[in-house]
Amino acid sequence: MAGRLTDRAGGSGFEFAYDPAWLAQGFRLSVLLPLRTEVFGPDAPGTHFFGNLVPEGNQRDRWVRELRIADKDFALLKALGRDCAGAFCILSGDTEPSMAGDYTLLSDNDLAGYCLRKGAPAATGGAQVRFSLAGFQDKLAVHEMDGRFYLPEGARASSLILKFKVPNFSNIPLYEAFLAELYRRAGAVSCDTGYREDSEAPYLTARRFDRYESSGRVERLHQEDFCQALGFSRSQKYETEKGPSFADCVSLLRRESDVPVEDIDRLMKWQVLNVLAGNSDGHSKNLALLQDRNRPNGWRLAPFYDMVCTGALDRVETGLAFSIGGQSAPQGLTRLHWDRESVACGLRRGALARLAGEWAEKLPELAGELRAEFEHSYRHTAALQRVIAVINDRCWLVLQGLKQGGSDAGVTRGSASG
Image 1 (tube, rainbow, N blue to C red):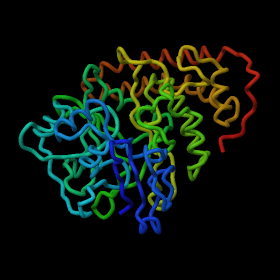
Image 2 (image 1 turned 90 degrees about the horizontal axis):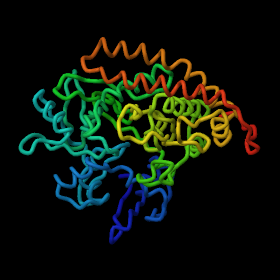
Image 3 (image 1 turned 180 degrees about the vertical axis):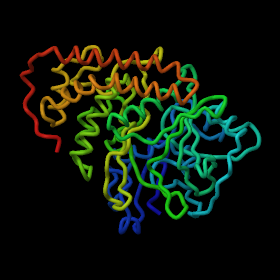
Image 4 (image 1 turned 120 degrees about the vertical axis):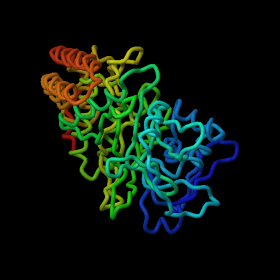
């Protein structure tokens, strides 16, 4: 047992204390929950770790309604915590830990029903699967064996996440699959995704990087997103909501990554690609630290996930989740903003500007090639023309902005990313 999580009276927050045996041989659950004997109370930033595990939006409302539980984080974790992000399960205090469990085959009809219901179970019958995955998008946690999907039961872990259509916004699974592959081809390590049309409603598959198979069993690998690691609540995932800045994220990697230079370079490319590909939802809960499988107290930047070209969607905020040198509007970015951000991150002054210029030149051609491949492989890809238009426009805007010089007395030469 890693420790005991308690709900403070009146719902004022969490208390957490490590189990003495875990302190002797375990690993920390969070950067802000170091291995100590003290109790971490609701005022400790580290206890935000647990509130960041629960679903949001429609997904949260659905679980509260179906399970007939209080709309509180603790109640959700108690009900859903057997399969959540990271390397542990959350069980009721009166439940004896057990590794027992199995997988139930998801038939083609069952899968079609889940796709149409956006992950919600049937009103009657069928396996009752419960999981706690953060975020707004409707999901289903499954395990894949021999090309078939299975629902985990008991202590069994999922290895794959199915993500479905989003009400009022068309083509989200397609856009996410496209951007994940585009980032990968641009050299940004993203999670393994696929776009599936084997159901009436297309969906996305995302392989969990916090799971791996060993001796035929799915094992858990620990992770925490940057909101958790920096001590922010899930309501502060955007910089404009008093959440972390991009420089805060760079500083986190400089402190915690086993290979900070490499991971900071990866993070820089991710931020540049977010700007160029029209992804305004690249916030701090879409970044994570991932445990080294062979070294439990070693940490690296996790593969990137949840990239969507929000610029191709109607009625969606176009401002950047992380500002660049204080500028959140992509059309307002100049070289001065890129240089300010480089210095704020402790990078060489022109590091981000050079990277932005390089990929603003390359990305349109790369995106065009990938679109042709998608059109050859899938039936429903006409909407990708909107993504291509956004990418072409953003790349042009960034190149024009980089031509605008400027001076800033507050900008000084920073060190290399290491």
